[in-house]
Length: 194
Image 1 (spheres, rainbow, N blue to C red):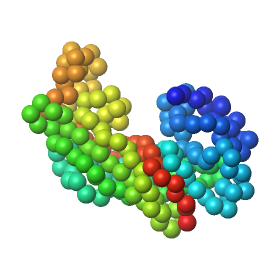
Image 2 (cartoon, rainbow, N blue to C red):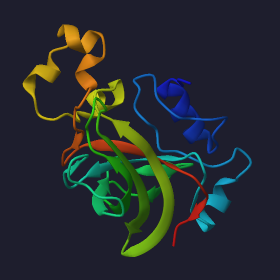
Image 3 (cartoon, rainbow, N blue to C red):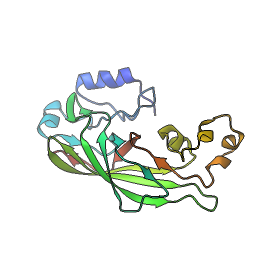
Image 4 (cartoon, rainbow, N blue to C red):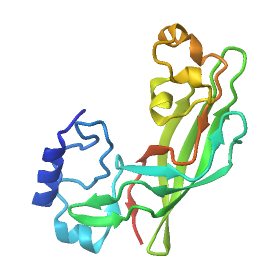
């Protein structure tokens, strides 16, 4: 569902969010949340992020399907501030920690896969536990290409490559998430920020 950015701004100015706000007209995730019935004063007194809120995180390290391991910890920072009803709840640059929940190296005609979750965010020196999921990223898919995740082969960037057209290029391709990669993580449960 695409919601024009001017509508998102209007809803924030009114102090409420009407319906689901998941993306701007430019395909950029908008980190907003709160049920429409939550008054502005309640948000200020109990800063809460709700299920379905998408937080954008910039990775600080390389994670690849060939070297990452299940249970491995990763670190990143908030790429876009999280604002609820004009209140800044999670500033840009806040530290985020997470875990690799599954990984599959590329082999036997299958592309590499990395699946990450975010488990905590540190705001104003206080750590808050999260349950947020980025979903699996599969090498060779449009999502992986949009994230800039590839094995480093310059030929992969050539959109006119015939093998890319038929999807053959994704076979045996490892997935590499480089430092600076920005990913969206959707909250699975409500989070009260401390």
